[in-house]
Amino acid sequence: MTKRLLLMALLCCAVNQLSGQVMIRRTAAGAAEDLYCSSIITQTNYDANTCSGNIDEDPDTPDGAGSCPGAACMNAVDDGVATVLRLAMSDPASGDPTGTQTFRVWGWQSDEGGSGEPSITIGVRETGDGADDATCSAALINSPTGQMWTCDWAASVLETANGSAVEAYITCTKAGGGPNENTCDIDTVEWVKN
Image (cartoon, rainbow, N blue to C red; front, side, top):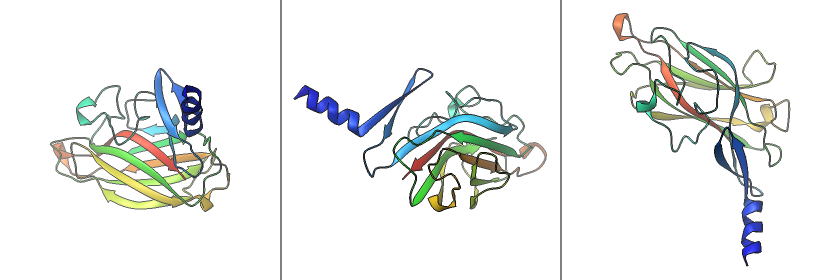
C-alpha cells in the first residue's frame, strides 16, 4: 500500500529544488504545470537581480506589499521612472504547451501615497526575440496592497514548440506628478502551462 501511494505521488508531482525552496509542479497527464522565473534577462528600475526568493513563488500565496522593499519582491527604485522586467521562464517538464497559456503576475503600486494609477502590460517573448509574440492589453495598477493580473496567450505563437524559450516581458508605466509619482512593484510571476 505504501509503495502504491509513493508511486502515485511521483506520477502526479515533480519536485523542483531551487535554492532551498521546494516548489510542487502539477504534472499529471493533461494537467497544468506551474512554472516560475529561472533568471532575469533584463530589468530597469528594480532593486533585485535574481528570481530566487524574489518573484518565484505561487501568486496565490504572495509575500505581500509589507515584504517590499526587501529581498522578497522586485521593488521599484524610483517611483517616477517606468519599470521593465524580462524573465526567462523554467522549461516545461510535462510536454509541449498546447492551447491557452496564462501568465499570472501579483504586484501593487510602488508608492502608497502616490496619486497616479500606472498601467501594466504583460507580453510573451522567446529567447533572442526583440518583440512580443503576444501582448495583453494594459491594465491599471490601482492597489497599494496587491492585485493579480493575468495574461492569456495561445501556445501557437511559440516558435520553439516545447516552450523552452518562453520569456515574460512586463512593463509598468509611471503615473502622477511631483511627489505623488507611481509605478509598480512585482511580487511574483507564474506561467500556467497547459
